[in-house]
Image 1 (cartoon, chains in turn green, brown):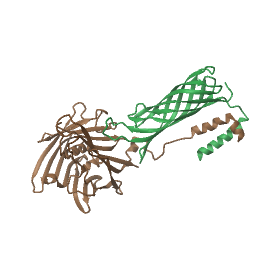
Image 2 (cartoon, rainbow over the protein chains, first blue to last red):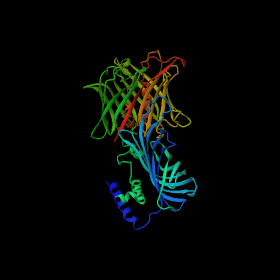
Image 3 (cartoon, helix red, strand yellow):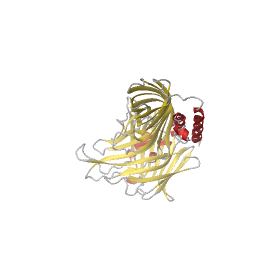
Image 4 (cartoon, helix red, strand yellow):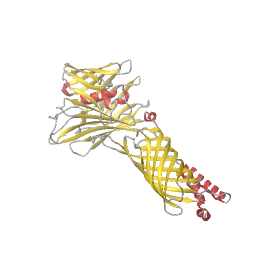
Length: 191
Length: 316
């Protein structure tokens, strides 16, 4: 209910504000791909999506916010064929501000790097109880945008690594890795 | 509303609102190692895989007293299973009733109705370590009582002196002596005198580290030697830093009937209640293991695996 009220209020503010001052150019993006914890002793790979919005300060610099959510099965590798392996549904969530630096708009191929500081949550459902953590993580991404048209880009790939402030204690992992691809769409007047 | 949807610039705050409002963590979640310690065992699952048959799972329920301590285990019948109690008089379902003195377990009484079938008495020294474990019942070899005196040196398990008494009053004695790895002081073997049998405790080479008292270690292996006897493997696993699975398994040669019995000991289910219980649990699991058809030779033939695992189910 709180989320719905927030959205309604923001829509109202947006509609009324539009007539009063111009909104800077921005883009929205949506990607899909995989994520996981490369140093974990467990076998895990999540499949999910990432959404984001970035406001363009100029044609090279954009600031914004991203939201990533992934789900997969985590299983502990016993290292032999004796112990039965069980899978546990695991969900990741990462959300936070992002600063993106890219080459100019005139190029067809636009490589970029991005720096982020995310709130990261990880949950593993063990049936009768759940493990979870909520922590912060600085992160860095590298990616490539390919121009499709005046406003549309293909995000050919984006690789993101986040260093978690707190270890995911049951997975024994402190680094999160994402590989995604998708689309980006520019909105508003170009800068 | 039509004006809203035509307006590109109105989409930004909407997307932002969706991005900002989210959490998948609940207050009831286990969010730290300290929280893991607050979980309690809710049930046991005993899984058995025998002679290429389909696996069988049996559930053991628990009862807790008003003091928050386990008061009773409800064991179903293990007739026809590899898993059994030490006393052959136990053929049906039984309950294991616990008694406590000064907050520590003093008695584990396995009863069929009003009749006590096996009883274990726990006594502790001034440091809270188990120093005497007495088992009373009708046991193989006409044994009616076993008294284990447990000796510690420098806070480590050092020896177990066992006196077994028969129904006619006859007594026999054996001594188990612990040896530790010189490199890191971890427990290595229990050697039995006078038979010379050795219970060997090895690190799992896939995981490394210490088998005991190390929160990051996940598995440990123990087995009996000499190698010409059955290759018996015990594995226990820490997941989330609490003991979750205790497994007993052996290789057997296809075509050779194997009917080893894995014998229940209270320390299998009471590990968290007793100091040094890791070493003691593995010792008793192997020491009470009944080998019927030892594997001969060091190789050749085709081997299959049988196992019984005790899976501890946790909850809040």
